[in-house]
Image 1 (cartoon, one colour):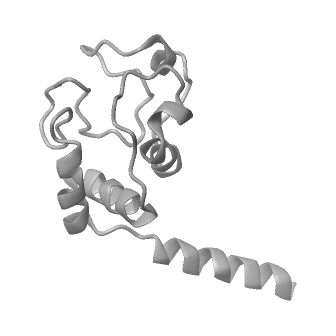
Image 2 (tube, rainbow, N blue to C red):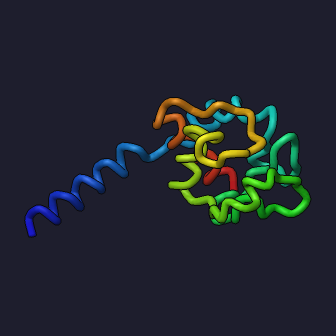
Length: 119
C-alpha cells in the first residue's frame, strides 16, 4: 500500500514539475508561427491550432493533410501532442511537417500550456 502511495506521489510531483508556462510557451511558439496560427482559425502552411486539444489528427476541415496524418488515428491530447512536438517525423512517419521538433521537455510543456491558454 505504501508503494502505491509513493508511486502516486511521484506522479503528482512529476506532473507538477512539467506543468507548462503559457507565457514562456508563447515565446517558444515563435518557432511555429511561420506555419501555424494558435489564435486565429486560419490555416497557413500548416493547420491552425485553435482548439487543437481534443481534435482528431488530420480532422480539421479545409486543410489538406498528409495521408499518414489522416490515417494516424490520433486524437491530440497533452500526451500525443508532447510526443509529436518532440519528433514529428518519428511520431507520424510520412507527416508533411518539416519542423524537426522541440528538444527540451520544458519547451514542449510550455508550448502546450500556450496552446491551451490561446483557446
